Length: 492
Image (cartoon, rainbow, N blue to C red; front, side, top):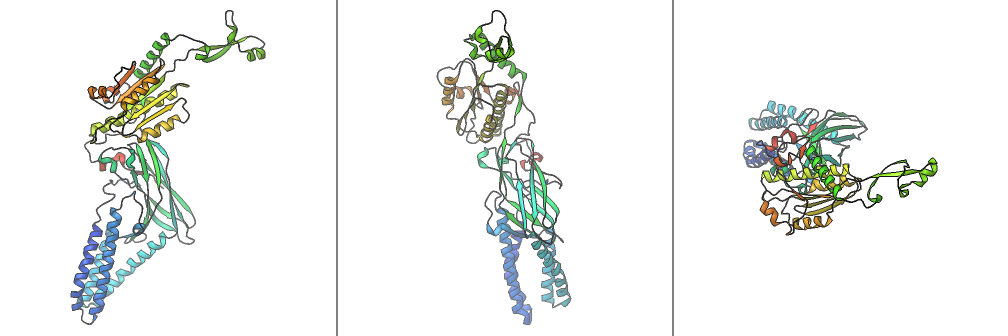
């Protein structure tokens, strides 16, 4: 089973609610006219008409309030228990009202009998749905972190705590939306998903689990909830449900790409040039390589005496010079107050490239320092020396960074120049396209060995490729109908 409705159709205009409001107001207006034609039953007809009008108005207010309530807002007590009519039930109720009004006007016992016969299944369906929803508990298990563009499985469990009756055809609808602090990505950022799973039967005292899969193509913090449980069993004329404040949160990392051989070759050439300029000051600046037998001419300072005593022969330590470079990345996420599609895509591309080179550097080196300075809406500075928890902390930060005015760029570059050594590679990755605007935000003093890279797709293509490129944010299609943003629901 799959939920392929678009985000717009998942929250339609509450037409039934507006019709109920108009129908209720109409019943108040026509109840006196119907009472005047009913003869001795005029008082009863007027009371019944006014009662129907009150019920229709109250029902319409609930439907309109429930449809316009946001998924991320707190569930009000008015919308916690929901009753609505599907299209079939609405037509069934319309026929019942026509039969009831015609029986009163025409004083026809046969039409009153038809109305009574139709009212029975309608009332029974409402009572059965109410009974099935009692003593049910729903929960959700959400991964705390995911990578942009990958499939994520979300598990939903439904527990039936009744003693005698099973829960039949229980539909659980979830709501997924991105938090506002995850970055501005245009109109598609407001899209809300409503994945749905269906439980055919949950026996009393048992718990069933199902899962749906999401592919989220934008980084940021995603919020889940509330959960809505509903059923139409057995006739499908009345749908009842309840909403529970079961919340969840997931952080979507920026997409990690693959560095080309040219990027590695440039880094290796820079390391070799630095090695030729460096003089060896002693063995403590080198890395231990292995132990070997003593040879004539070896220095006695390199003898490993413990191993020599155990092996009963002289063993010396051999070192090789470390070629690992430190890395300083200054990420300039500039974008105007009202960014265009190209501005947004450059920011996302710059974040993905920065994440790729930082993660790759942490994996390929050890014991060297890595600094990441981010200049966007906020200025952030990260410093790591070991891989450990560095990758997770790095991606957590890059998942939530936002583009902005980048007022702290000059200070970030000045701090980077103070931290630079002969064994450090410094990269300035910027989203600015105007070199004059970039130069005006840099320090007056020139910084040697500073590599300036513009976040342009053509320029970055020579160093970096995305593994699973997601579709552009605005590709000429209606963003509400993009299949990549729609949930996929797994079978039970």
